[in-house]
Image 1 (cartoon, one colour):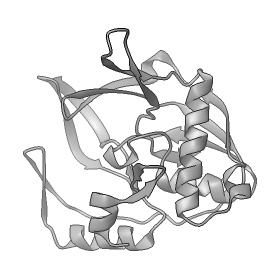
Image 2 (cartoon, rainbow, N blue to C red; image 1 turned 30 degrees about the horizontal axis):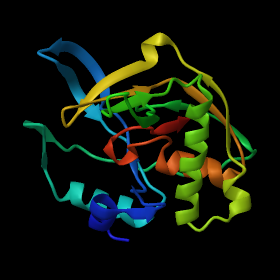
Image 3 (tube, helix red, strand yellow; image 1 turned 180 degrees about the horizontal axis):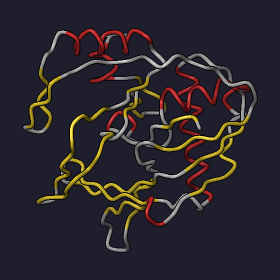
Image 4 (cartoon, rainbow, N blue to C red; image 1 turned 90 degrees about the horizontal axis):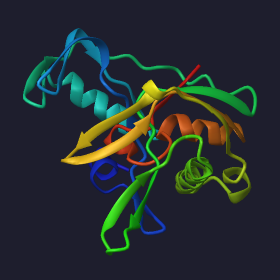
Length: 212
């Protein structure tokens, strides 16, 4: 798959579009919040992950050819990149920290018939259930069999009230959670969680994990 295909179209699973990449929040020192915007002290960084090496390579080549990047009207000077070597998983248990908020939700209807989005707290059983189903879809697209995809389970979550993040994406409120997440399952499924992210809206910068 090409970078434009993965970014613009992605794959389809059960009628849902799935784009197999994820990226973090901007990482750096925030020195001020002004008019609803974060002011960083340079430098800033962003992490990107995908199970497709070709996607990462195409992204890196594009960045190396571009001396400046326009980010929401702010010009950034690209200074370099690094690639993190895959370490693998020696066991079937791994602890992650979220470096972009994990969002899990359902679209419900009020008694008046109006749509309402309900965002789940990590302590609610539906939070873990949806993450498992979503990871299974991603793994199936990558060619993993049912026995492997069914093995994954979110065993525990450690979040604080300050880990809840409320963001605006294209004038839509999105709620998500940072914090720590412990998964058990086949090492191949743990790798899917790391490469693709967990929860919804991964290609919009939600649900990226980092191994602790």
